[in-house]
Image (cartoon, rainbow, N blue to C red):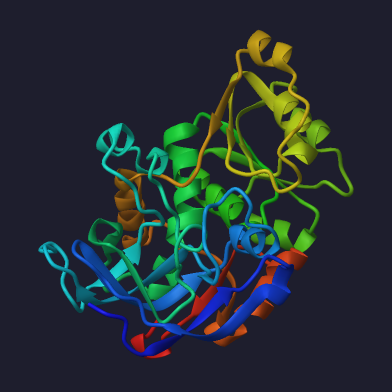
Length: 353
């Protein structure tokens, strides 16, 4: 099938920062055997969108590149051989293509050697239409809005894996979550409280800590006014926490290491303040700490997450919602670090929320 008319999209024409973000026309994508084309209803902003605008190194891609990792919508067309998906289905997009290799066969799709992520390696969700393999289009019920579904694939799926699979958080655990204003951190708080854990959260903003309190945080620490490690020791009677949700990196790594109880789990999904902290290996082996890296989650975890969202076991927290034409302003807000939770994008408003 050949490309037909154009569509509205937000794309990169360079890597010079937000000045490289263009709102304009791109060709409506073609689809092939095994693919589905999705008319995007809603999308979500992520930190990687800023990284791609500012740098993009390390991610194979070609310019112009349509931005956006997260998205949900309605299947518009299906390619040859697709029998388990059909036009008109409401779907949320699993945020990666992958190959048929040992990793995907054992259920670790994100470790596939042929992994490719929308908005990083191929055209993403900030567009009226996008094409993905049919296996990456997960059906959603009418009980789940497009807006809520659209922010599940990155921050919420990452947090789900961090808390449930990697962190194995239970009601017996105390959890430390850095930077609770971020999407993944706030989601990790929601999931930790679903498991009845005790949760300590940090932020430089009293406003963000107030939101965390609404979601059940037990101890709130403004790190501009208080030492986080001292607060952890006070809250745990000097014991330390069982699980650390770490996505800040260099600025918090020493605190994370020192805050963890012997045998504790430090689950890492990001390094916004820098990727190369000092590694105290003696503390790692003497305290028998587990350091676990997480990048999104697998198919089974995604299915379980969608089910939990449909049953309203949690509801994604939105800071704000912008239209497709206003994505540059949404990115500026994220860059300023003003948001609490997720920033949503309405793409095709006629599809509804």
